[in-house]
Length: 362
Image (cartoon, rainbow, N blue to C red; front, side, top):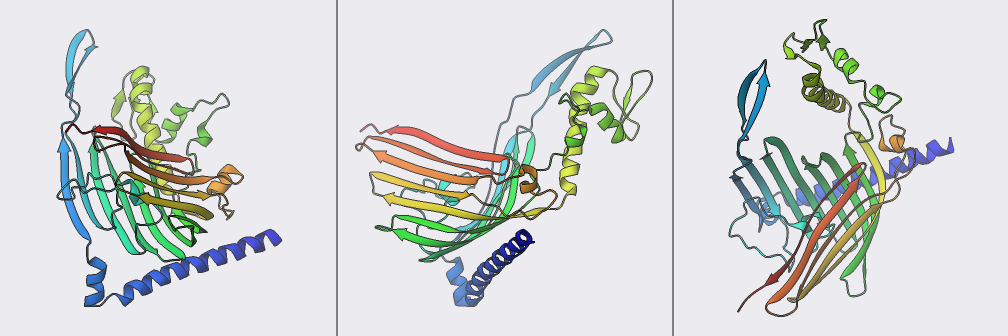
C-alpha cells in the first residue's frame, strides 16, 4: 500500500513537472506568435534540404550449379543516397567552423547532443534523413526544442537512429547550478521517455532448453508448410525452397525477421519515468578548447507495466549519455582534435567519434 502510494505520488509529481515544462514552452511560443515574435523565433535559423549520393558496392557475379547446369547471376547494389530536410537555430560554439557555404545534411555536429547551448535562450533543431546504404533503407531523425535559463533547463527531444535501431521521445526538466567562473554547471531533474518496450524479447517463447530456437515450428505457426517430398511453401502456396539448406539459410532468417518485426510493432509504447543528474563544461580559446557533457539516469520508477524495462530487468539500471570535444594547437602548424559521443539507453548503445592530427605546411 505504501509502495503504491509512493509510486502514485511520484508519477503525479513527474506529470505536474512535465505539464509545467510544456506550459512554459507553450507560453514562450504563444507570446512570440505575432509577426514580430515569429520573426524573432525564426531569425538566424536555417532551413535546408539536399540530396547526397554516390556509388555503392560494385556488382558481384555469383556462380552456382543446379541439376548439373552451371548458372551465373549478378547481385546488383543500387547507389547510396541521403535525402536531408532540416530547420535549425543553434548558436555555434567557438570551435565549430562552417567549412561549407551551404548546409547539405552531411554535417556532423557533435555538440547537437549537448544538454546546454552556447548561450541561454530558445533553440531548436528539426532534421530528418532518408537514407539508403548498401541497399538497406532507414530513417534518421533528430528534433528538439530547448530553453536554457540561468537556473533551469527544459528540453523536449525526439531521436530515431535507424542504423542503431533506437527510437524514443524524451522530455526533461532540470534545475541548473553554475559553479566557479560559470564554465562548469551541474543539473538535476526528471526525465520522461516514450519508446517501444526494448526489454521485450519476441522469441522468448520459442527458445528451447538448449538455447536454440524451434524455428521450423515457428515457421509452421506463421503459415509455412512442408510437403512429404521435401518442398517448402509460403503461406500463399508459393514454393520458397526445395531442400533443407535453402530453407535454413535463406527462408528461416526472413521468417524470424518478419516475426520479430510484427511482434514488436504490435505492442504499445511504454513510458519510463527517471531522475537525471548531469554536467556541462565549456572552455574555448583559439588554441585550446574543451567541451564535455554527461547525463546519468540512476533511478527509474517501477510503473508495473508488463513490458516495461524495469519489469524486464527486475531491478534498477543505469542509462547515460556523454560527449567530448577537444582540440589543441601546439603551434600554427600542428594541432590535434578528438570528438565523440556515446549513449546507452535500455539495451541499446550507439556512438560516433572522430580523432585526428592536422599539420599545415607553410
